[in-house]
Length: 259
Ligand SMILES: Nc1ncnc2c1ncn2[C@@H]1O[C@H](COP(=O)(O)OP(=O)(O)OP(=O)(O)O)[C@@H](O)[C@H]1O
Ligand SMILES: [Mg+2]
Image (cartoon, rainbow, N blue to C red; front, side):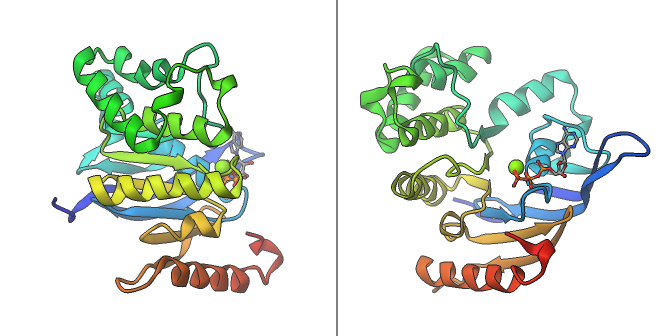
């Protein structure tokens, strides 16, 4: 598998909310690249612009200025057909609160993006079986979200974000609503998806444990990237976790640095 080259380029992204005399600068010039096959983490205090950044990449909101390129293509220049394809099958979005539809079963939730995009059923079925097996949700595919545990709901949501074989999975605090054990289980699955299928993942997290599964972490504050940690080749996840904790302790010093 080719694991080189830039998959996503974020260039000087700015996003202001509000009107003239009441502006919030949520993103204040964020720039970074994501390489193909990377597992990139984003950490930063509450309100530092992390969700805004993911939402700009997902085209849920429009940046005030700057741009995002996917494989060199400017996503804000997409016409409506390209945009639908981008949202439907080139990115997968995994939300903190799962965002499953209550009146659909697990299987229906997972297949929903494909039915919207008219993918062949037999092909979708094979893909679903493979994902369900890996994510250990085969037994709960016919249950409704209300009948699933938090960890199961998030694994169903993970399957939904992966079913269209997206170029990149965007995950916003995917472990935020999970207990420690379910969080660890989900992170093991995401790590497997990244390592085994070379899937690129961009994950926002507050949790140093979840972050330690990443190959690189960007720290953002006040709408800019101000630090980066890279997991070394020979470094174990536990060692990387210790380094993340050390950095957070250093950053926790100032009142504006509450991570
Ligand atoms: N729709 C909106 N309208 C106005 N201001 C907003 C809107 N969405 C976010 N903001 C503001 O933009 C800033 C960045 O918000 P964002 O949700 O991106 O932060 P975050 O880093 O994801 O925080 P958290 O860790 O709490 O999820 C905050 O000051 C927030 O109040
Ligand atoms: Mg957020």
